[in-house]
Length: 241
Image (cartoon, rainbow, N blue to C red):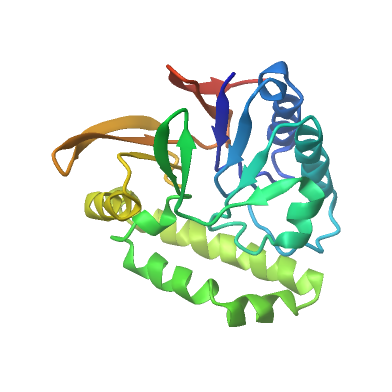
């Protein structure tokens, strides 16, 4: 039995093969034999609210609810693309919502779970936007808009994000080592799993004189990416249709 982690799927109608890969994977024996499934943010390219009546959110909910109905817990943590996802959709999808920065015990190892964007502190412009859009007032204002206005707003936000990414050094958009160390120190753990940076890897380093580990999940733009953790193993692997 193992525990599975995915993040940064960025599901979108423009890449239907990735949505199909997601559905097929969630219906696979590997998932249905798992102890739990964790989705650490950016499940979709843009989440405009739990009342979105497009087909994609309904497909996602059917796929994840089937996993939950099979007896496998599905934990979900919002990312920077889906931070408007709330309790209503979580109920339909069978999600147990997690706060960013939750610590879960994985086979006797306390592990800090994050989306990862909060660790990219060198990207000062992004962090300023992040603080603004996470306020209850900002979210309430956006969710009060008609669906079509929210879709237009999300499309503009994606354009702005691409422009920012294209004009910012990659090192600035990666995690800051001091921010990683501080988050792990505050959580009292030597193990961290996160996504967001789209740079799948297992990093080993020294933290307060002890051996520490940071695992970065991959994105699903061209293929799937899964972290599989068991009592004595951990494997980052790619999925293809």
